[in-house]
Structures are given as C-alpha cells and as structure tokens.
Amino acid sequence: MIHLASSSPRRQELLQQMGVSFKVIPQFAEEVHKLNESPKNYVSRLAREKAIDGLSRQNNQTIPVLGSDTAVILNGTILGKPNDKEQAINMLLSLSEQTHQVITAVAVINEQRIEQVVSITDVSFSKLTRSMCEKYWQTGEPADKAGSYGIQGQGALFISNINGSYSGVMGLPIYETRVLLNQFAISKVR
Image (cartoon, rainbow, N blue to C red; front, side, top):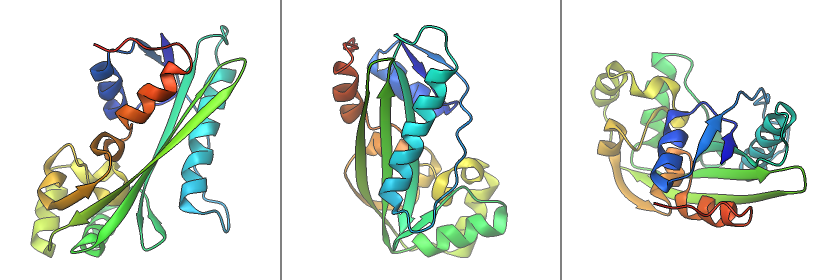
C-alpha cells in the first residue's frame, strides 16, 4: 500500500495497471518554475515537493508516498497546461513537425528516506494544421494536459515517433516506478 500525492486519473490508472494498492491524498505543492532552473531540475524538485507535502499530511509516516510531475519541453522551454483555446492551439502548432521531450520525475518518500527517478522521452509530431488543432481542442482533451495533448487519447494521432517511455509521457513511467517501489518493498505486480 502506498499513498499517491496526485489526483491525476492517468497516474491512478497506471498504478492500477501495475497492481499497486494506493490511496489518493491531497498535495498542495506550488508549481512555480524558479529562475535559471533547468526543466529536469524543475520536474525533479516538484515531484520531491509533492511527495514531501503528501507525507507531512498523513499520520502513519511508514506508508510510502509517491509524488510525480511531468513537463513537456520544446527547445528548452517548458510547455505547461494551456490557459485557453488559443494558447493550446499555439502550443500544438509549435510542436508540429518537431521533436520535443517529456520529462517525468517520480519521488517516493517515507519517514526514513526519499528516492527518485527521472524519465526522459523524445516525442516527434507530424505536421499539424490549425484546423486539426481546433478540432482536437473541441474534444476537451488538451485543456488539462501539459503541452496541450494526451498521448493516451486522440493526441496520439499527431505522434509520428516516440523514443522512450510511453507511460512516462502519460505521467508515470511504469518500469522506473516499479524499480523505485521495489526499493520500498512494494513489489506486487499483477
């Protein structure tokens, strides 16, 4: 049993796929990018802060807490969740015919220690038109996704190539997470 410091349905789905028992707990880490912080360090710091915050909110600190964060990076710039339709369309058009990185960090903490892993995946997009992006926006899928797309949904139609962890792009790299959880004696996998 672990506690998941995330309300992401995708992370919950991936943990269920792994056969890991978990309880969702709220976390309130502030997602602010610090000046001169690299995207990798930013994502790593947020995953740690989410796990630490989650641990501080529970009575039994022997139960491991998993925190995770994912960012879409294009040419060194972090593409977060879009604020509106126009920003989402512009993000998608900027990804058109480009290869970007998706960085997902996972941190697990209990009262004794914290361990962390980072997964970096290269994702290449095909050529997108404004019309394609507008139709995609109408699905509702881009509104709450970093980079304005979800690989597990219709956003997959835009992807011409992926080099790395598919589940990492979804928000929780399964292989790396399994290795990390094994360090905390959480090893049940269906």
